Length: 231
Image (cartoon, rainbow, N blue to C red; front, side, top):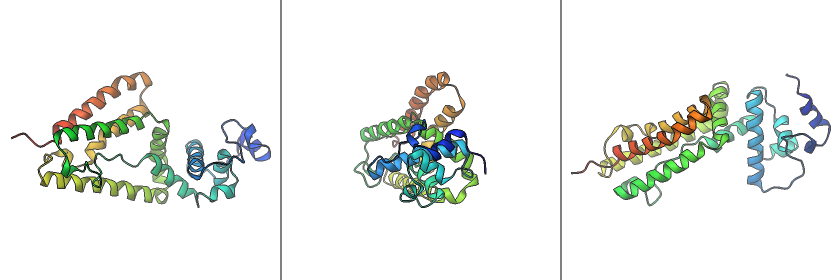
């Protein structure tokens, strides 16, 4: 087991609030806020140490909790890792079949509004550093922890399958065009993944210049290929 840095050892021996970057203990928080705090701590630990080397003790200490307090929220390290993926990496859906704007009810005008709302949420998430760090963590550690991401993977595929089925019904009812986008719904999300990869690999100056152009091109792609052909 790797030797902990001195700051981590001092956290175990003394007050947690004396350690920079760690949450003081004994703060009462609502359950959802505490869960977010734990996940932020876990993202730091997994990113710094890797999934295999990260310990529940260290996640608890960074979150300002006892180990027992951590286990009250998450039963295992796998459960923490999966919750990280669920928090940031489930796809934003262009349509929700349960909403009034489900594909079969769309007009050309409402389609444009739906596309704009989808893009606003998706590209805003790119500005959250936790999204990029979690994606990097999935790429780096996911293959080493297949059981820890099994639930996230199943939910991710389920959402895409639901979106694909909605697109198919929209094409059959004539409110959408039969195109590459309706045939393979993953292509609707591909520019967002490209943007995330650019943020991981390129400098901020390059990314800040290209992202608005990518988003505009993404909008054009959706609005040119999704509406039914006139006439």
